[in-house]
Image (cartoon, rainbow, N blue to C red; front, side, top):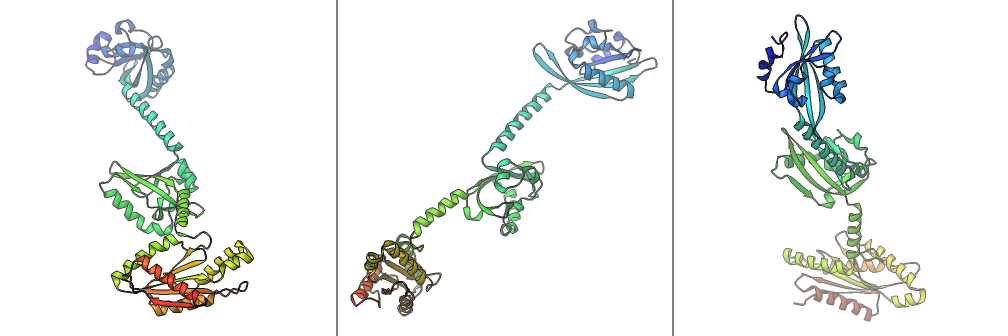
Length: 421
């Protein structure tokens, strides 16, 4: 019936279909006329079906979609295969999107086309919203100051923004598919898979990593730089993806190092300063008390240093202090703490060292500072303690011993146990 019947013959069959449908018939001239349609098809026509019956396709549907419609329906009739086309129709100030499906009905006397229409306006709206969200997302990602990298379960890079490219000196497009391990120093790669797997299986959704010393990036030229990282994960089907937000903290790390230097290092000589030494003395006292061993301190100053300054100038005096620091430092162990106490006074902490051994070190120091430019000598005080005395008492003792050496004629070592309680 649908191949030959008129609108009155097939209308009831079409009305039983729960979506807009119509029957178009091809003429000998290649045009298409409306044979029948169900009531739902009025949504497409925006008017009565009866008024449009027998009219040509081009007079019924809007002209601005006609090129797409004619191409699809003609291809359907020529190839006798179904064709689809998506079109937007403006009605009363609103846009309605339709998917028109054309299926050939090859009857004994003519070619008819079954036109099924599906309202895809909501789908298009969601697609538009998704595209808008994606554009916003891409704009944020590509203008972000921080590097942003997404990896899959295999640690392959899925997203690599512009800032990450500048940070690691990699082209963002070329980085896609690259293993994340190529962006880290080799010494960290062995344990990285375990960290990724552990985080992937944990219930934690995000994790900050602020430890400057243990998070390092690797640039394409092989240079390393410190990173601050926050990692998050999402589930994508049965797999998980992880996104890292990275910040290059090279300048901050440099500033921290400069502050550390200022807090612990004497700017003239490059050895430790008084503040750092005092802090370490307290630490070593506790170790002595805990483990029952001794430590020793050596304090010395440069004999007649004021005269050297007055005669040769402060710049020469400063150079002399630097040379003395280098010469004395060469006589010490890595565990010894050597600091400038103030002016031309220096102090040394010798962990796990008794009085006799410390006195021998002091004698070596005294002979090590024979400099060609100046015939200098040192006055040295040496004290040994079990740590039971206060830091102030220990320092007073070694200071007193140094001044005893000066009063006794300079250029000598005076040593004693610290017996204060």
